[in-house]
Length: 581
Image: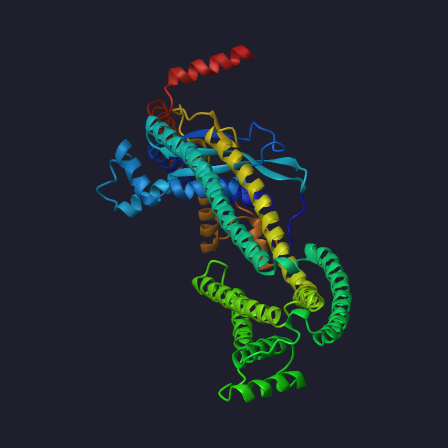
C-alpha cells in the first residue's frame, strides 16, 4: 500500500492501536460493564394495548342517513378530551392505586400529566374509496394503551380507558342525535306558528277584501254586466213611467173640470169649502212644488176663507224627516252590524215616520176622494196616477240601488290588481313557509330515525376487537440495545482517548516519523533491545488483562442470569433452536 505524503500509514495506525490496546480494552470493558449494569437496573415498563375497530352503521345509508357526519379521528379526539379530564384521571389513579410510590412526591397536576404521558392513543388508517372524494386515507381503527411497571395494573387501567371510550362514544352519539332532533323539532314548531300566522293573515285579508280577490274578478265582471243591463232596463221603465205620469196628469186635469151630477146646483158652506180647499192643497202639495201656480192659487183661496192658514203641510215635513232618517240609517249600517243598538233604534224611527207619512197620504187621498166624490173618471185616473208614481218611486230606488251596486262592483274591480298583488305576496310567503316546513319535517323524520339508530346502537360503533392483556415482557427498556450501545460507546471512547493522547505526545516513533521530522532517511536503525525484565513485565500485564477479562465475563454472565434470564432457560432455548435447525 502506498504511503501518504504528509500523513501516517495504515501500519503506523495499527501500531498505535496495538500500543494503546490496554486503554482500548479498559474503555471497552468499563463502559460496556456500566451500560450492562444500567440496562439491568432500569425498571421494566409494561404496556397493555387494546385495538378498537370503527364499524360502519348496520343499516345502509341510502335508507337511513346518520346525523353525525364528522370524521372518526376528530370524534376520537373529542372523546379523548372528554375522557382524559383532570377529575377522571385522578379518580382512575385513586381507584387502581396508580403511581402509589410517587403520590407523596408529586402534586395532583404532575400525576395527571404523567398519566396522560403514559396513556397513548394511536390512529390506524387505511386507503379507502369514498364515492364523493375518491381514494383517500380514513381512520378504520385505533389503539388505546397504558404503560406501567406492573403489567396487571397496566391491563386494568387500559381496560378502564377502553370502557370509558366505548361508553362515551355511545353517549356522545346518542346525545348529538337527540340534540339534532330537538333542534329540528323546535325549528318545525317555529315554522308551524309562522304558517298559522300566515293563515290568520290570509283569512283576515279575505274577510276585508273578499269581494276584490282575484278569483272574484270574473264574478264581479259578470255581476257588473247584469247590473248595467238591469240599470238600462230600469232607465227604460222610468222613462215609460214618467211618460205615463204626464199622460195621466193631463187626463186628470181634464177630469177635474167635470162636476159630478150629485153635486150640481148644491150650495157649499164656508167650512165645507175650507175643507175641500185644504184637501185640494194637500193633494197639490204632494204632487207639485210650493211655487206651482195651482198650489199658490188654492193657497190664496184658503187664506181668503181662513186668514190664519200659513201654508205649512204636514206631509212635506214628514217626507223630509223620513228622508233624513233613512240617510242616517244607511250611514249607521256602513259602520255597524245589523244587530247594533244604534242601527235598531234608527230602524224603529224610520218605521214610525213611514207609518206617519202613510197616514198623511191616506188623509190626502180621502180628501181628494171627498172632493171628487161621484167623479169616477177622476177617481180612476187619480188611482192610476198614484200607482204610477209609486212605481216610479220604486224604479228610482232600484236605479239608485243598481247604481250603488255598479259603483261597488267597479271599486272591487279597480282594487283587484292591488289586492291580487298583496294576496299573491301573502300566498307566496305562505307557500315558502310551507315548503320550508315540509323540508324541515322530512329532515326531522330522518333525524328521528337516526336517533333511533343511535339509541339501538345500529349506527357507526366502536367494537373492541383486541382487548388489553397483561404483557409478558416489558416494552422498555430495550436492554439489548442499551448493552450494544454501551459497548459501542466504550470502543468509541477508547479510540477518542487514543487519538487525544497521540496528539498530546510528540514522541517520534519509527523511521517514517523520523524521516518526516528530519527530512532525510536514517542511515542506521538500532532496534529496541528487550531485556528479561521487560519480557517478565509484559507477561504479567498480559496475565492481568486476561484475569480482568475473565472476571468481567463472569460478572456479565451472573448479571444476565439474575436480572435478564436464567442460564438454564437460555440453554434450553438454545437447544430448542438448534433442534429445529
